[in-house]
Image (cartoon, rainbow, N blue to C red; front, side):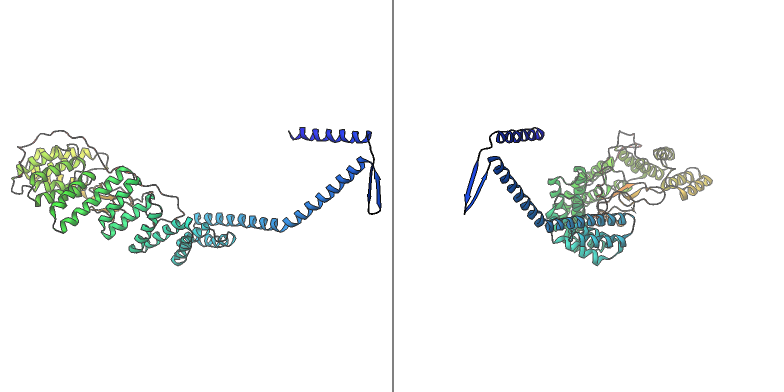
Length: 482
């Protein structure tokens, strides 16, 4: 298109020149005693020359005026380029484990980029890696001065406060950050941890309700967290002497966190205290379907402490019927069968328990001890008993509560892991073999900001569904008092 327009203009100029050459005409100009005689073509050429000269002068003046501005622009672009290069070198230095070089790069980037937020963030991370909390706090505080980076500054300060165990400051900052970004998943987790440390379960319940409305956390995880919070609220109500409210809250907690035995044990204990042994037995049986646990078996058998050994063995069979394939079901029956001197039944269920634990390196310590007790009690076979006791020394450990985040082990369930402080991370399972592992998942706000954003631990393992079928009993099942 441009070539066509140029050809048209050239053709028009040629036609015009030919026309004025054929028709030169005559132009006479008289001005202030001056007289100019020329042709029309020459006059038009002179006018065109004057216009061209004036245009060139105007362009020259405009170019001279743009020189300072262009120099400033080039200088700013060079500073921007050098600042971005300094940021890149700083991030690479952090990745290489050289925080001192990263801090120098951050200072240069801040000077070149006029205190850009990313330079402050790099400086804060480098100072954190060097243990210079004051410098890191200063950098994070500088981020608070800009609305668009205030959340970054708050996250860094929250991490510092949590590492320093300053829960009051951390919670204040977390609540402030929550107002800015209520949909931040790590922030909800941090608030739950801080509220759990303070024992403020009512606030934790409200935080979970808000997170559920916004769908910040996965539905199954929110449900499980609610069960844990209700369990703690039930314990608070029990301490206040309000057993009925405690029982109601415990029932809800057991339904929401069905894979945990602690809420079920607590619920059954409250029902027993209220004189409702039959309801307590039903609560334990429901819990056994999803979370068979030695505490549940002991509480179930202690509902009738005066019952003879055969009746207790029958009660264990009734409990096993709720989850017949679980290793804990076989162990509960075997223990009561040993007490009732039902050697064949005890051996059968211990053998089934060993088979149920087949994927493991071998029977657990508890299984070995029970087998030793059986060999000694049934036929006085002391060599076989000693052999089982020797095996117990090197046998895999019995199941316990293991933190899904840090691998920390605990014999008692708690809402917070004692080692990593994770909320609702303890699961009843066999400890992992070898050295304790550290999971790749991390949701703590104290994690360095320059690390990639961690994904939340999945809800896998929070609920289980095990098959169950009726089992034959040794005697008539006991009838619990209502």
